[in-house]
Amino acid sequence: MNGSEFVPLSLTPLLIGVLAAVACALPGNFLVLRRQALIGDAISHVVLPGIVVAFLLTGVIAAWPMMLGAAGAAVVAVVLIEAIRRLGRIEPGAAMGVVFTTMFAAGVLLLEQTDTSTVHLDVEHALYGNLESLIWLDATGWASLLDPVALAGLPVELARILVTLIGVAGFIWLFWRALKLSTFDAGFARTLGIRTNLLGLALVIVAAVAAVAAFDAVGSIIVIAMFICPPAAARMMTNTLEGQVGWSVIFAILSAVLGYVLAGYGPLWLGARDAVSAAGMIATISGLILALAARFGPCRTRSGAPVQV
Amino acid sequence: MIELAADKGIRLSDNSIASSPLAVRGLTVSYGQKPAVFSVDMTVQPGAMTAIIGPNGAGKSTLLKAALGIVKPLSGQVTVFGRPLEEQRAQIAYVPQRASVDWDFPTRVIDVVLMGLYRELGLLGRLHARHKARALDCLARVGMRDFADRQIGQLSGGQQQRVFLARALAQDADLYLLDEPFAGVDAATEKAIISVLKSLKEAGRTVVVVHHDLATVSDYFDHVFLINTRRVAEGPVAETFTADHLQAAYGGRLATAQVDQLARVLG
Image (cartoon, rainbow over all chains, first blue to last red; front, side):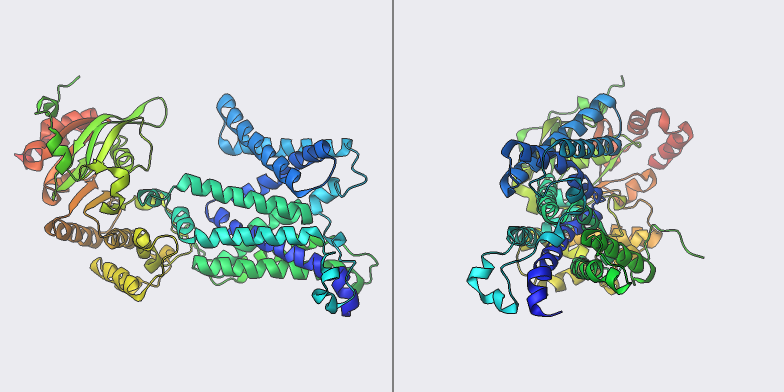
């Protein structure tokens, strides 16, 4: 494949996939270690009705209404969970499960009832995004990367996810020490004056922003997979937090690149005619990496695990 | 209700609060309907080693956590060396219960000890060789120097406890608060911990320990604070660690035979 084909058709979706994967994997490391891995799952379910309602109100798919809609949905979810937990006197996990699935289902119903034929918003896109359609038609080859006119035609999703990734990485860099401390030993962190509740909330908000930005470009399947699979696989490669975050970035990039290429060309190599969903393939690859790490990773022994005889 | 000896004692003057490393007034904490700690006053003596004792669920750990601001009390005041807790964080070192953290966390022994330097380093302060040397020195004081690069999950319970103590030593504080440091540790570790605590006392630091082993109270500590949701008694071990106070704190939960035995030990 040469530049004149690769740059307009594959470069931007590939980049967006990579950036979205890394943006989700970074906060995912802390969520997994805090036993909050499913928050990523939850966020990507809860935001759907918020995004649909935002579209219904404004009639366009734009970043700000979507973010606000998603944030509003998250607030509604938190209030509902608290209400169900208190009124129903059931454990928080069950309350969350009920709220997340119900809100996602409501989002799907809303979506089906809405005329979204003119925009990229339907059940399919909500699940596995529209990565393949994020092409760069103004590009003619590698030279376009230096051409201001062509660069102006880059899909907006690319800039959006890039800004999100910079924000996510900046947050984790700035609060690295406090995040590490409060994730390992929240009580001790509090005696040092670290506001652990506020930091925990900030982490969830950062994860939510990453989820919404990624959701817009690549759909909820990647979001859910990238929050959990790369960090969980990375944990089995190393015994330091720095190492884990590094490995999770490598695994996220590997999943996105391999998944995208295999989805586009794998079926052709096997003699089939059509490509398969890139988002689905990226998530599948991340799952395979997790399976391989679980089988062959050097740091799999856990003190709580039963001893193998 | 049993009439409590300590309540008949002298009302503490403001002076004692100002000089106390940790003074608690009217502290009440509740996790649900029932208070875990109810209207407790405590005045820790400077330079002393104080044991907080009481039956399971008596609010020992809760008292410590509320005094440190880890759990939010319903009411009450805490002063550290006469000033509000928030201004005095740098004066306090804390050793939480070993079981309160996930030891599978991806980190090495040395990293845990370096966490004790957080207030010094801040969010982005550079970690210098002297910080590392200090952390290694703290590990040496608890006999764990050789384990610096181990993953924390590979340690035994006693070793984990020593690492926690080393982290508190790295904080270089004037007031040390330890939550059940002797729970489930081997004899060698217990000996190592108590010798470190005694050296802290000799250096003029104040040590407060939530303790559960009544048999070692007289050997290890010079002050004792008895609690069963409410304060039962507080004072020097020789005067306060008596069969009557133990009976008041433990009630029916301490078998009569045990009380008799302790009474014999205590004279």
